[in-house]
Amino acid sequence: MLNAYPDSIGGELGEIIKLLQTPELERVFQSFYILPSIFNTDLDRGFSVIDYNLNEMYASIKDLKALKELNIALKFDMILNHASVLSKQFQDIIKNGENSIYKDFFINWNKFWDGYGEMTEGGYIQPNENYIKNMFFRKPGLPILNVRMPDGKEVPYWNTFYQEVKYNNVRTQELLNDMDIQYTTAEKLAEHINKALSEGKKPKEINFSKFQRNRDNAIEILESSREYLGQMDLNIKSPLVWEFYADTMKKLKEYGAEIVRLDAFAYAPKEPGEKNFLNEPGTWNLLGQIKELADQYGLTLLPEIHSRYEEKIHEKLAKKGYMTYDFFLPGLIIDALERNTKEYLVQWIKDIQENDIKVVNMLGCHDGIPLLDLKGLLSEDEINALIKTVVDRGGYVKDLHGAKNIYYQVNSTYFSALGEDEKKLLLARAIQIFMPGKPQIWYLDLLAGKNDYEAVKIAGAGGHKEINRTNLTLEQVQEGLKRDIVRQQLILLRFRNIFPAFGFDAELQVLEAEKHILKICWKKHGYQAVLEADLKNYSFNIKATDPKGAILEYDE
Image 1 (cartoon, rainbow, N blue to C red):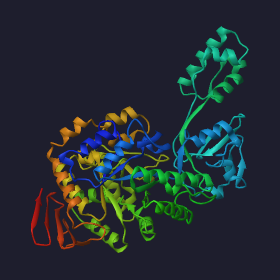
Image 2 (image 1 turned 120 degrees about the horizontal axis):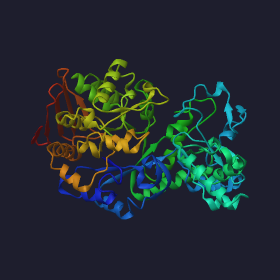
Image 3 (image 1 turned 120 degrees about the vertical axis):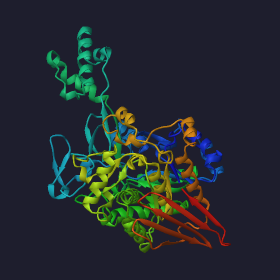
Image 4 (image 1 turned 90 degrees about the horizontal axis):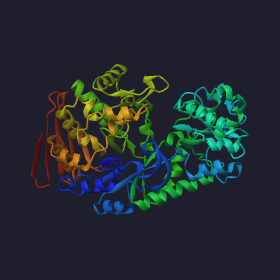
C-alpha cells in the first residue's frame, strides 16, 4: 500500500498516477492510502475536513477512475471526532445561533456539563474536580472555543484539537460608519488598533490610551467580525451526525474506497467523569454502529489509535474483528538494528499469531515514529535509548503539556532515524515485508528521504511534523528512481506484492537461528518464501520456491 498526500509528488494526484504508470512502478503497489487533503479541508494538512468533496486543486473523479484502471484499491480517512469550523454545519450555527438546525451537531460545552459544575465569569462551566480529574485533554486548559452568536452571546463549544481566532484589521471608514467620531480620529484609531492586532493582542488586551472613550465600541466591532479556524468536536448523540456519517461512508464508497481509516475515533464518545479517550463501552458502541454503516457498502474499517502495548488495545480491536495499525513495528525494527537482536520482533510476531491480529504495518508515515507505544514490551531504558538515538540523528520530540514522556511520537524520516544508512533501510524494508500484515509504504521512505529542517523552519511553531512531509517534483522522483536504494526497495515490494506465499491466510513460521539472525518463512498453496536477516552486519537474503520447486533467490 502506497501512502502519500495527493500533492506529495508533482503537486497533484494526477502526477502520482503518472508515476504509478511507469515501468519502474509496475505491479509494486496493490493499494493507495491517500491522505485527507484530497478532500475540501483547511488545517492540519487535511485532518480538518470542511466537507468530503474532492479538493479541486489536487484531485478529480478522473484521477480516481485512472487509479481503478490500474487496479489500485483506495483507502481514505473518515474523521469521526470532529469537523472544521468552516463546515456548513458550524457556519450555520454561527449565522443562525439557537435557530440553526445544526445547533446540537457539535458539543455545546455548557449543555454537556450542565449540572456537573459551576458557571464562571467567563461564561463557561468549570466542571467539578471529581468529574474532570481523570480526563485526558490534548492541550492545556479546558478544550473550549468560544463562538459568538448572532445576538452577541458567547457560547463555548468542545474543541479537542486545533483552534485559531482571527481578528481582522479595521478600516477608517468602517469606524466612521459605526462610531460618532471625526475622520482623523477614526484614521488614528484604526492605525492604533491594527498595530496592536499585528502584535498578537486580543481586543480586550489592547491599551486604547487616548482613545479610551472609543474602547467598548471598537471591541464590539472587532468581536462581531472575528473569524475562526479549528476542528470542532461532533456530538455523536445527534441524529444529524449519524446522517452525516452515513452520507460520508456512501461518498467514500463512490470514490472507490475499499478501506476506511477511522481517525480520532477514540475521542468521540464523551461522558462526564470518564477518561475522555477510549471510553468504555462508548468507544466500542460507536465502532459497532460505524461498522454497520461500513458493512452496507462492503468497506473494511481500520481504526487508528495510539496506545501503550501494555494496555492491549490492539488485542481488544482484534477480538472485535477490526484490523489495526502496527504502530509497534517502526520502533521494534530500529531497536533490533541498534541492539543486533531479534528478541522483541519475534515476541511481537507470536503476539500477532496468538491473538489473530490483522495489521497494516509500516516504517514511516505522515505522523512521527511512535516509540512510547512500546511501553510494556520494551523497558523504559530501552525506549529512552531509542528516543535518544533518533533525536541524536536529528529527530524532534514534541512536548505535550510540557512533558515529553507522555507524547507518543518522535518526528523524523525513517531513513534519518536509521542514521541515513542505506543498508539498514533496505534491511528494514525486507523485514517489514516479511512481518505479518499488509505493508504500507510512505513515499519518502521509498525514496530514502532525509529530515527536512527547512520545512520545519518555514512551518514555525507546531511545524515539527513537516520534517517528514517534503513535497517533491515528478522530476525529483524520477531522478530518485535511478538510485540503487530505491530500485532495490522496488524489487522487494514487487516481490511481496505478487509472490503467492504471503497473506492473512498464509502460514508464517519463525525459524530457529542465532539471536542476531532473524529467519522468517511464509507458505501458501505450495509456494514458500524465506528471509534470513543478519541484524549485526545488516545483510539478508531471500529464497522463494514455487510448487514445482523452482527457486528464486534475492541477495541484497
